[in-house]
Image (cartoon, rainbow, N blue to C red):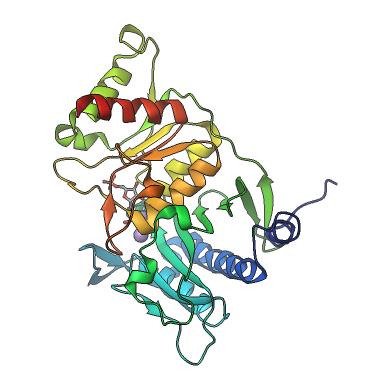
Length: 334
Ligand code: AHG
Ligand code: MN
Ligand code: MN
């Protein structure tokens, strides 16, 4: 039987041979992965978990929180607060930073997370996931505040996501390529199944919520119109479309077979729909490490200087040549 590489072995290898992972970061990523297993367990129970309903709270983004959003957030906070690697955490589901309590040692890292992504899919047994990002706390002597988190995505030391689909997968980058693990549920361990994810540079598949079409900016409209025109249009070939309404699932598909994922800013979502710190930055790091590109239309997402924790941003990411074409359409339009 071929030797199976577990997440632990992969991280140890990154620590020993590539100097990409400190012992502290390795422990932190293992704890995050363990929390994802727990969240996946709840998700897989579906209605039997009894925690799929709306709780009635409205989160800081003005959205109804589902019980499972709240549970996933709690699982991540409880798993990560005592290990000694983290100084603080922020999450889509919390208004401000959660500082590691005084009773635990505070470490050198900051964790950012979207505990449950794609949660509108919960009611329909569609795929959901967890997105996370790790930054270094630049001023280790001080208790971190919101400003400690406002670092550009290029400063991330690790990013990843779990996708709770037919199989539970964990995609990870520590800045040395993008890799994928599949959860062996009997053994309870993540096994390396995609040791070197590469996104094809060209694609004939795009993902966008077309119900926003009337609000799109001209360069986006131009790009999609050209795709839809297919063989007889300027692109000279037919395109296919997918939209899962779950960024983890749409991005995972692009990591597997290429494509372009877009949630651009538009007349309704003036700043964009997705969150820079919890969604766009970690996914951009993962995509770039797999040979893809990520832009807000004008600028590389990883270069953006965040100004607020819950800030939103336009997102165009995936296969390099298509993303660059869309960026060129934006340049031509301005
Ligand atoms: P979340 O469930 O964390 O709020 O994120 C949902 C996001 C993203 O996963 C997805 O791509 C997008 O919102 C779907 O938006 P629409 O409902 O507008 O299609
Ligand atoms: Mn999300
Ligand atoms: Mn979410």
